[in-house]
Length: 459
Image 1 (cartoon, rainbow, N blue to C red):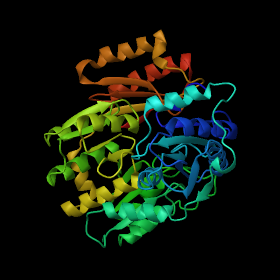
Image 2 (cartoon, rainbow, N blue to C red):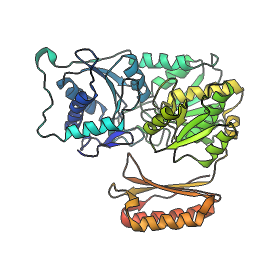
Image 3 (cartoon, helix red, strand yellow):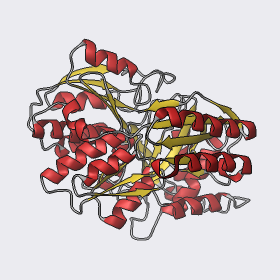
C-alpha cells in the first residue's frame, strides 16, 4: 500500500484497494497508533464523518472497526461536510478526525482524509508514517482485549453543533434579506446548507438535495453549476452558491449567471478584510494555479500574493509561515484561519454574504476588482498515474511553448494529486496563442500516457 496519500488524503474506487474495506480497516489501525499521542485520556477518541456515497457506510464501518480494534473510541458524526469534521475534531478534543469522502469525484470513488486536533489536515510526515506502518507484515500493531477494546457510538447533535458554529462566524446583519440559490451536489451539504441560510433569514432555493448514494456530484455542484446558473437567472435570485460532495469547496454564481471561482473569492474577501483592518499582515496565500489577475488585484490593496504547491494543506502551511489570515485555491477551497484551518464552502459563502452587506452591493460589483488573465486549462486523462514531466518528449513540448510565450505568459504541467490526470495550464495575453500550444503539449502527453479531453478555456 505504498504511496497511499495524495494532495487530499487517500482516494480511489470504492471496494478496490486502497479503498477496500480491508484496506480501510488497516488504515484505521495504523492511524490509531500514529495519531494517538501522549497527553490524552487512557482511551483516545476519534470522530468520523462521511458524505452521501453508497460506499460511505461500508468504509466508515471498516475504519471504525480498525480504530476500535486498536483501543480507540469513535464518535460517528454521520453525513456532514468536511468542515464539520474539522470543527468537531477541535471542539470535542478528539485525537483526530476522519472524513470519508472523495470530494468532487464521481460516486463510485471514495476517500479517507485525516484531521489533526486543531482541525487541520494532518501533515505529510504523519501520512508517511501511516504508510510505513502499513508495510509491516504481519500486522504487529497492539490488539487490546476486554475492556480495553474501543467502542463506537453515534453523535446525534453533530450537524446542529456545526450549523451553530457557522452561524456564529457571520458578522453581518440578520435577517439576511437576500434571495439565495444553493446547489448542494446531492452531497454532505444537502440538509445542512439550506438549514443554515434559512436560520440567517434568507429566502432559499435549494437544488440537488436528494442524495440516493449514486447521484452525488452528478451534473451538479461546484464542478457543474449550470443548473444553478439557470435557476438564479430564471428566479431573479441575488446570488448562488454551489458546493461539492463534501462541501469543502465553493463556486459562486452572481445574479446575471456569471460563475466566480476561488481567485474571484480571494480577491473579494481580501478587499473586505482590508477595509475593516483584519487583513494583517497584508498577505494572501494561493497556489501555483492562481491567475495572474489575482496578483494584480491584491497589489492594488498593497497586499502580497504568496504561492505554494497545489492542495489546501499546502495553503494552510503557507498561511502559518506568512501569518496570512486568508488563503485558497482557484478550485474554490478557501481557508479563513480565524475560524478553521481547513477549507469550508459554507463558511466561505457566509464571508461573501458579509462582503455584500458591507458594501451594500451585488456580487457582480464586488467581482469587478478582479480582471482575469486569459487561460487555457486542459485535463488529460492518463492510462497510468505517472508524472508527465518525466518524459523527454513532453518536456520538449513544454519548453517550446515557454519559448513562444517568453515573458508574456507561463506554462504549468502537473500530475493531479487525487486522480490519474495531468493538468495543463497556459496563461498569457491571447487565448488564440495559448490554445495551439496547449494542444501540442496534450498531444505529447497523449502519445506517452493517455487520451486528452477537450481544452476548457477560462478567459
